[in-house]
Image (tube, rainbow, N blue to C red; front, side):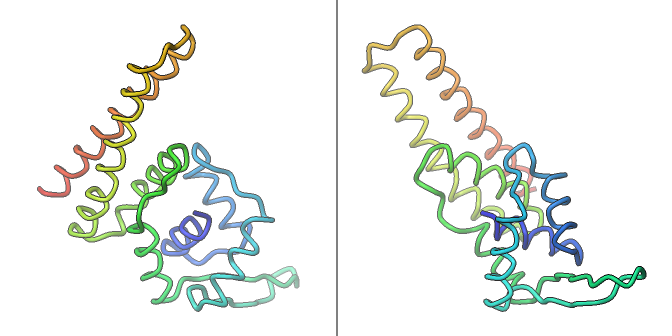
Length: 170
C-alpha cells in the first residue's frame, strides 16, 4: 500500500522524501502513518522499477536535496495498484479500499467503475459473513455490539460505493 500512497502523492507534484511523508500524513493519516523507514525502501523499489525518477540538487543553504517525481510507467503502475484485486483480510480490505477510493479521482470514469465493481462484491461477501457469524454464534453482549458495528461499517461502505458509482455514471 505504501507504493500506492507514494505514487499518488508524486502524481500530484515532485517532492522530497520529507515532503512525501508530510503529504501522506496530511491526507491519509486517518488510515496510516508510514515512517521514513517504510518510505525510503519503497522509494528505492519504485526507482529500481522505473516508476520514480530521482533528481539530486543543492538547496540554497548548500545542503544536498533529493527530489522524486513519477514517470509515465509510474502513472500506469499507480492505476494498476488502485485497480488491483481487493485484499482477503477484512481489516486490510477496508483500509486499502478506502485509500484506493480516496485516490480514485486520478482514474477515468470507466476505471472508476471497474474499481467500484471490484470492491463491492468483496464488501457484500464480508457483510454476509459477519451477519452469518452473528446469527450462528452465541455472542456475549460486547461481541454482539462489535458485530453490529462491523455490519453497519460494511453496509455504510457498500452505500459509499453505490454513491460513487452513481456519481461516476452521471
